[in-house]
Length: 302
Image 1: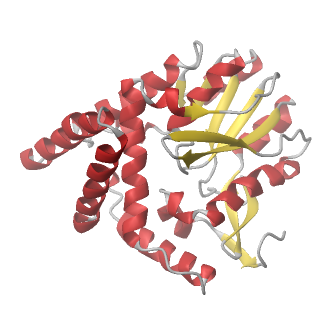
Image 2: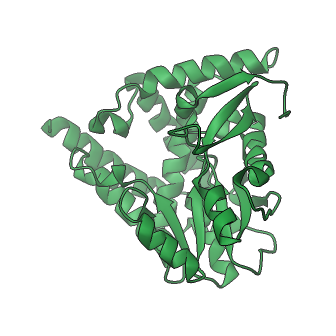
C-alpha cells in the first residue's frame, strides 16, 4: 500500500474524526463539512481500496436519476451527499467515544422478540444502540468487507471500534458477518435474540428479492430479513433515525407479522418513503444503480 495513503487514512480516521467527536456541535459540524468538501474534491471512498472503483460514477448516476424524479424541486447537489456521508462517520466517531448514545431519543419499544430492518440512512446504523432499552439480547448483520486485508489498517480499526461500541449496547449480542456467520445467526434467532438487518441492498436473484417502489420504479431489495421473519414467526419492525438538532430521533414504521415474505412489503415501503422524502440523508445512494428494476410505477404504488 502506498505509504502516503496509509498516513492520510490514519490521520483522517484516528486523529481528525476522534477530535471532531469531542468538539462542541458548531465546530464539529463545520470541520465535518470541510472534510466532506475534501472527500468530494478527491472523490474519496474507502471501498476503492477493495476494488470497488465505480462508486463515484454510481453516485452521480443515482443523483441524476433522483433529481429527475424530484423535478421541479431544486436538485440535490453532489456535495450534499458527501456531507451526509461525512456526518455519518462523525456519528460513528461519537458512538466510539460514547457520546452518540446519549443523543438518541426513542419511543416505547416492542416487548416481544423483533427483527429490526433499516437503511444506510441518517444515523440509523450508528444509532442502533437504542435497542438496549428493550432489555433483550440483540445481534446485527454486517458485511466482512471491513475485514479485507486490502483496507488501510486505520479504517479496519475504525470499524472494529464501531462494532464493539454497538455490541456494548446489545446486552451480549454480536455484530455478525453474513458471509461467515449465517448458521450462527439463525441459531441465535431461534434462541430468542433480536436481530438488526440493513435492507436497502440490491438483491442477488429474483427469488431473493422484494419489489419496492422507489424513485418512480419498482426496485428489487434483498429480502433475507423478511424470509427469516416469516420462517421464524417473528415480527418485522422497520425504523429510521432522523436528525433532530443535536439529537437523533428513532421513528418506527408498521410492525408486521406474516407467513410469506411479500406480507412484509409495507415495512420496506416505510424505508423507501423516508429515503424519497430525504434522499440527501441516504448516504449510500450509490447502491441505486445496482438495484434491478421492473416497470415504472407511480409514486408509492405497488
